Image (cartoon, rainbow, N blue to C red; front, side, top):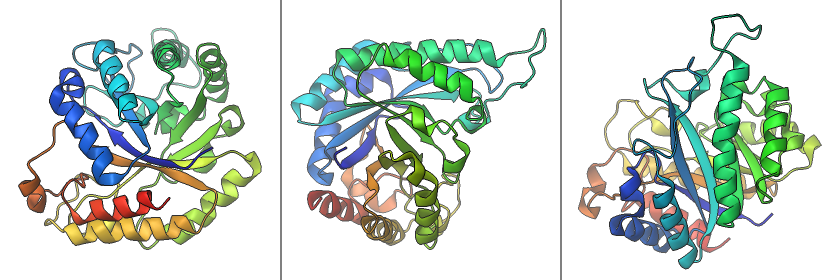
Length: 309
């Protein structure tokens, strides 16, 4: 598998913004300023809460297929390769990692069987779209920690998806959870979210290497990043951490992460988090404390790293 110089684009953006001229301009700027080779299109879907079994997608509240087709087409015009990543979220704000049901099904209670049927239909929808649009990879789930123990359901889902899509299939587990997935052999590419503390990258890379080595599969960090605020480099997954803006801390995090990963030949890339369809004014970068790198020192670190890969 070629090295993935990737960035996540459009997560939680309005469907119309994704394919608007402003959205297209943002994607072009992303390529120019970071030297990416792959764009990861994070397509949102919703269920009401972690115990709901109905899943909503291709709606005005998520991303319409029409807008997705347009931005994929434009990305290809830019020479980018496409990783399609359908992401399920809960409307009530609870993180998707907490989607969970009784292991022993009971009458009148929400069931794993119902949820996986609907989730499989959801992923199959985007598998067909990925096949039609010649996307290079499909990520079939993201950080769905409680679901990962349901091995038989996941294997069945992957078997179904392979009938619709003949590209690379990956699953994006969460940070620290790489060893909990017992069905890595069923996917083509192993991936996880690399939100690791700046001073722990060596030990986490050692741990991950030992876990994935027996599977003999390519690996990349489907997500990785750090907000630009004081303290975030030590807990980069915490988007709610309180702290003053610190662009230098974000820059040092990216520099350290790349330096550590570069020593590991088995790390086949990144899907950095994240770039919006609607960019803030570049002059506002000095006051932005989020994950965005647009106009910040970290952006140059990413450009130099990707440009030289």
